[in-house]
Image: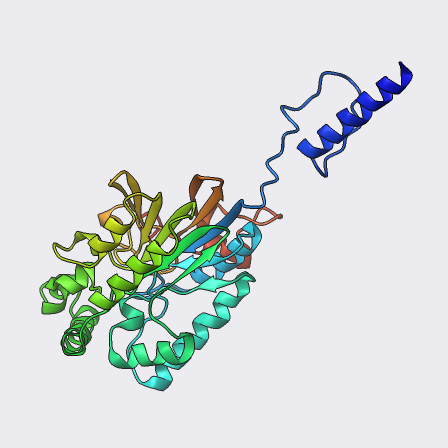
Length: 331
């Protein structure tokens, strides 16, 4: 009888260890002062972070603070939604801008995946500098059976790109010297590419094939700077069709205010800013980051305002208490 009791005890201990590996306690009572010891312990569970636009007149300190805050939160990697530099200027000026971004982004201490925006990839020169430093303008990767698609919404023909680049340079100068109302009347501001961007046939086919080769994934995350789906005709619709039978989530930036919509039963989330110019009259235009956790087939998305992420002393990192993260609310 004693031997049976010992065997049952051993089996019970083994079962408990399997359920709660690495967990031990001092409580001998049948009742326990906690809810459960069935910890997830899922090797497939992971968390990544997303940051948004820096540009249109980057506001000092914000991005640096965001990187320090993300380092506190400890995601496995960080990905953007584009507009990482102001763009424009000579090759040397563009390189200097990218060096500044790279140095500041490195402070997060985990892999950083870049997404190109119109400030990063509008002109032929900007695209050349990107290629020299980072390679392709669009790409995909797979992590723990989750697929990530990184699009380029500045994928125009060379002729159209030259035209848009000229219009954009003129429009930016008008914005700086005359103001936003005059900017809104420029050919660039009124162009379809300014609003939804462009995706080439080649890029569309690339992502349709990537999806076909990864049908077994748990989830797909799509990152695009501009909301390409709002165009009447776009290769993005081909990508959506290819994703019809797979759970997916889309993130974009560009407009500098937060917006959530449901499209085909999926979340399409437009991020606001992480240091870029804000437009509070358009909606929630505040500095934030997003934390995404994937556990099994479940996806949890948390929007975290920079003003609320504090270190162990109760302060915003890098003496950030004096920084304005929501222009519409600051004096």
